[in-house]
Amino acid sequence: MGVSSLILSAVLLNIFAYTTIKLRPRIYGVSLFKPMIWNFKLSLLPFAILVVDIIIFLLAAIIASYSGIAFIRYAGMFTAIMGLFVWLLALPNSGYLITELNLTHRDVDGDKVPIWYDIISVMAFAMSGIVNTLVNIVMIQVMILIFYDPSTVTKTHQSIFMLTALILNLLVAIGVYLGRSIRFNSWDVIHIKSFFTKLKNHFEKPGEWKNCVLFVVFHTLFFMIMYVLAGIPFFFK
Image (cartoon, rainbow, N blue to C red):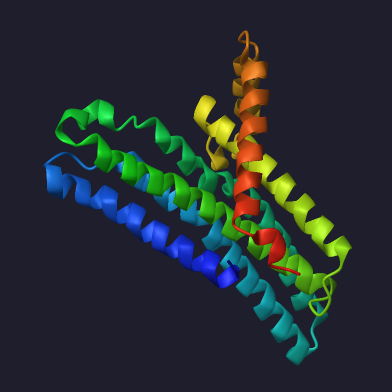
């Protein structure tokens, strides 16, 4: 599998997952489970942010090159850095789709929908979230490669790529935990005082630290296994 195959897989999985949840009400006469649609859209948000960020950076670089105005280049770099920060906050939304495996939407109308349908639909959702996460990581790795030297891939590059994947998957796992267990959203960091108050109250409960560590470790390992199974470490050889 190469980069193009990974992107194609992401496109197909996203289309299939979205189609199954939209067809569910039409086929079985139940209500549309809107939280899944919302989570699906949020899963695509990091990719959209990263693409816009790259476009702005490239446009600023091109304009600065032709105009000779250094300020435009620096403004583009600053905007790109801020965009990456926003992207990093949004990235866990991609991996969050894995939590749809709990099948909570069946609590509403599960008796009317065959279990096989929801299993296939939710598996597609979870896999699309995983692949969306991997696509984001690969895009960052490509940017790192271009920044260093796209003509030569050394063992140092490969080590950097693996470390990048590990760090990003770890942050995604932490973000998914915060979203699932404490119901944090990416934009909650704006209210920083409330954010830390909720965090403090949550971890004062017995056993929550243990649960957090286990959740993050196992999810990080799972995301890394999927990273390797997708053949991404071999993309840059």
